[in-house]
Length: 282
Image (cartoon, rainbow, N blue to C red; front, side, top):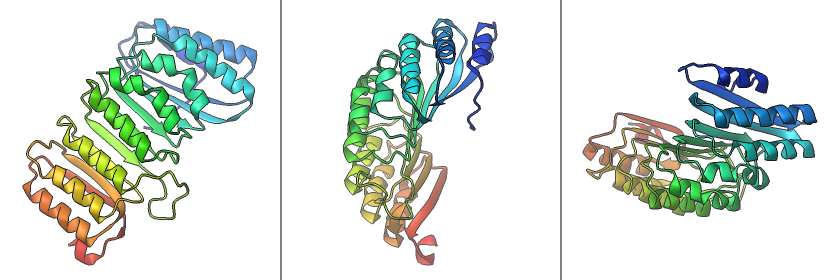
């Protein structure tokens, strides 16, 4: 869904209304934030925490800014702790370790968020490690989307998925993608074949998973083979699969054999496949 950004005052007013219609909140942090604007953001966080109105999606985008942005977000994050009506939460763009620390307490004390998305952020392994308790404790989590985060590598993926498996979440949707999968890597931190194997192992241990999107620069025939083994198991309930990478005809052949056994698959999308020829396409 597209991000629609409105002034905090608009959302504050909506949160005061007695309405059963779910609310969508979009905020952008960047540039220079005045004291008055920072105060209004704190008021919004307080309104979110105190309101009983369902917030279906809460999306925060970060742009380039000065120190006032971090200060305002830090105050916003502290006031947000205890909010329990947010169904889905997203962080986008110029978000790094320091920004995550501003909302760390909000996240790790929250057990009602059903979906979380990290899109094109600067989050590294340390960033995700700092919010590991969120993944362990939140039994409501159903959707995890880690898309185009260029500092995310094998270690991060393994730790996050291990935390979810260790906890009580029953994940239904898992999206892990990298940008420029049909070109050269822009970071040395990419997800390797080993990381793809971690993901396949998680899928095999998560019978509640029904949708998987896996588009990785290093997803080769071997990686697809590991996934195919999981998909061929009777316990697998994945009904929607979207994959992309540098696998070729051999990987597609292995996947096709697995799908002959799989009884749950309804939709499969193969995109950005670098080495696939007409032979594999058949």
